[in-house]
Image (cartoon, rainbow, N blue to C red; front, side, top):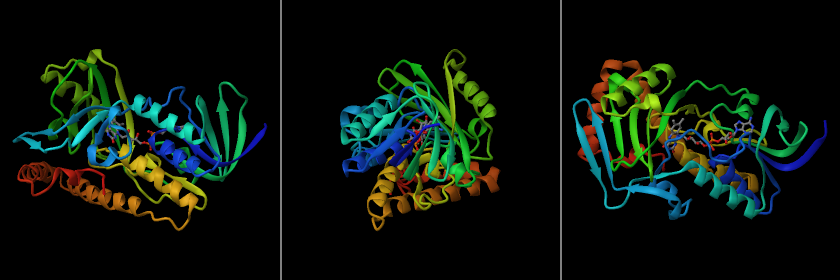
Length: 345
Ligand SMILES: Cc1cc2nc3c(=O)[nH]c(=O)nc-3n(C[C@H](O)[C@H](O)[C@H](O)COP(=O)(O)OP(=O)(O)OC[C@H]3O[C@@H](n4cnc5c(N)ncnc54)[C@H](O)[C@@H]3O)c2cc1C
């Protein structure tokens, strides 16, 4: 097997890996990104992005829809959060992926798609590619940006215990309202959503670890949607796990970003922004080991706050539904700002 030597090897061309690649390449480092899928951006996702967080990272033209109002439903309440400026927007993951990949390549990074890393041994990986023979690559820095089931993370023997299923159906048609449904009967202490895109909308659900398995969540989502006139049996179901089990990101020239690092929110499932910010922070730390990692620490603090709500709900399931109602009331009264649910620090 032939062996290739590179400087920085990034496994995974999701938002975390691409953000990291761009910044490193811009600063003159030799970067190779390997991605198992043929197409970049085909990730299972509802495409909701927090406006404050991502607007600084992507051009406005990539935004599909922006929402100044959020509709939140529970068993007992229906509230509308209104802001002067959009609070959340939707984005097409393929469009985001294509744009981020272009940026990284323009900066000088090399991206190889259709190539799966099958083994990781320290700073040496084995790559299987359709076009090329299997080969080994060694590097000076290895960045695991390979998502919730990260092989790089496994190679570091870091377990993942806090991980929950997310399910989405991308349905043709247009919807006006961005909706969050905290329906304990259907989604436990997770939630369901309707996120409108340009000509489609995502309807889906997420549930934190230990609350509801993927099959039960799917069954409940289909029933819940049918009660609202959506026939999801006719649509394509896409599901994936969301990792919110953060246990560090820096391991002697081996790094984890985004879902691989467990940086998504366990409460809301938001993970695109944490992936981009952690990708950039890791790039800065590779360039300068003294660079600040305040952005990651800020997100981890937020994540831990979300974690405490999940733990409380898991310990007292009956109480959790009351907690949800209280949370919604506090959101309505603006005692708790909607932004406190976002991963922006
Ligand atoms: C149903 C659902 C809905 C969601 N909705 C939202 C939302 O609305 N807003 C939000 O912010 N977040 C959402 N998320 C979470 C969000 O999708 C992730 O947090 C985000 O994509 C993480 O980015 P990443 O770059 O860390 O990883 P990913 O986007 O998962 O990218 C990892 C990449 O690595 C590649 N890869 C994996 N293994 C290998 C390997 N062995 N070799 C080579 N390549 C590999 C994958 O193909 C992939 O391209 C949702 C998740 C789910 C499941």
